[in-house]
Length: 357
Image 1 (cartoon, rainbow, N blue to C red):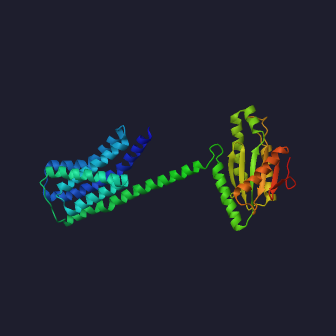
Image 2: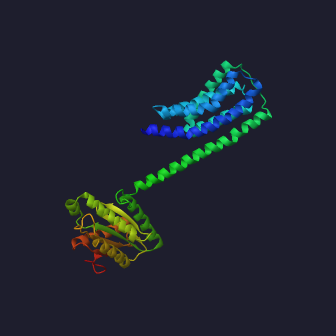
Image 3: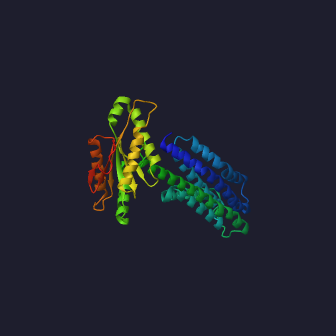
């Protein structure tokens, strides 16, 4: 199904119920206005067709069309044309005519904005012209009490129904927008934040630390010899390792910690309000658990982590420098044997704070 076709089916389904309600209530309104005029039997028949059968014909017409979206717009213009036709047939009775015009104008604006309002108005004018050719031109200046009460259901119920449909549509669009935003910020393989989203959170945390004069730590995590894992066991095994690490991060970190996939086999974690020594304990526990993890698919597969930690430094001008500290610590961990946690305090990596082999 094409995108336009799907959109058209959605529009046709959405308008099906509202058209049934609108033309049925309109039938009550028009019938009350037409009754004193004693119209011909064919007029009554056409009126009942418009009020009770046309919504189903219009829906099937749009549903079976090659381009349902355009077919439904054609149906809406036919609605407007018929509205103009009945205005002329009612001899421009003020309240039924004004009710018909306003309800159709509201419907057209809700569907297609000002452009479709103008198109619908043109269709209404055409309908009035055709109606004047069939019915003798006349004007009834007064609306009877019966006709007034016959218009009230259309005035009260149809705007409520249309408003509910618009609300549901807006709610659906809002939910879809939130889902798309979440997808754009999430790494598809691991379910963690992607590179850009995590760096946005890092900037937020950096500004919070400066503003509240609080500390914290960030960690960069690298899976040791990940390329060799892919080359030896295949990319499927490599993906399993990546997903397993992301699972362990979600299970072992605090709710306030923010984990992400920095890229490739590198992960990143923000640890708010956590001193460097405690952050080192948390990360080393993670390293230890991950190193002893067994893989049923490949029992021979052994994995380890190199982790670089950096504490918040109030002297840094921006979050990039904080990230550079963690990157330097990670480089130190990888060049001094791997499978260890190296901490960076005051911009200098050092092993004496925490060193695991």
